[in-house]
Amino acid sequence: MLCLTVFRYCWLIVKYSSHVSAEKSDVPADWPRSGCISYSNVTLKISPNEESVITEANFTVSSGDKFGICGAAGSGKSTLIMGLARVSDVSHGKVIIDGLDITDIPTNIICSRLTIITQDAAVLHQTVRFNLCPDGAKSDAELWKVLETVELKDVVETFPGKLDQVISEEHINSTEKQQLILAYALLRESSIVVLDDVIRPENNTIRCVLDKLFCQNWKQTTVIIVTNQADFLLTTTQTLVLESGRIIEQGQPAAMVKNRSPFFPPVNLP
Image (cartoon, rainbow, N blue to C red):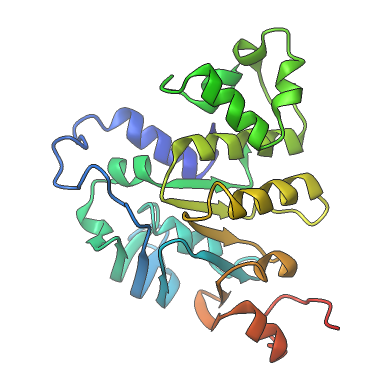
């Protein structure tokens, strides 16, 4: 399961950057363990020769936080999270994950340890099994269990080949595709998960699955949620608002709503 942008980049880095291995690195094998993230006066560019997209970003995500990021289209939300995987160029400041500066960590290691899922994720023309676990490290029982968790087991059981059924985006609808992506994310067991604009207001199935994951499977996991859905942001512990590449407000979303913040996405108030 690969994302057409950030996640495909990360997957290719992991697959082909054999000249830098995790075993030969000084990075601990269990890094990141707690999932703490700190942006300190960070300026980000898409590439070194381009203008800054994010300017002087400062925020901290604690272990296990459900951290929201919102803002209008073009405000820099995706660029901000791409800094975690070093897809964006850190031209100033520091991005620290569990005490380590990411500029000191090989990109393939960062990409292999974080899970970043975006709205334009794609299903490979491969088996269900491969889409869930490309390295084949998980048992059938584990695959079926995670499919049940994301409420996709009944669908896969209808396939003639079950887990070995070759699928593509023509075989499943958009909701089932997202369920498969979330199943993949669960199997990675990362301490940091990023969901970039995967929540749609009309998709109650995905919303219900995510509610369950946050309360159960990802209860101790650090999850960054990029969305403009106010009702979902209200379930986060902290939320920041971006405008033109700058953080213009951050704090507890309930307090933002109570204070009628002009920057927080519209929400129905009592």
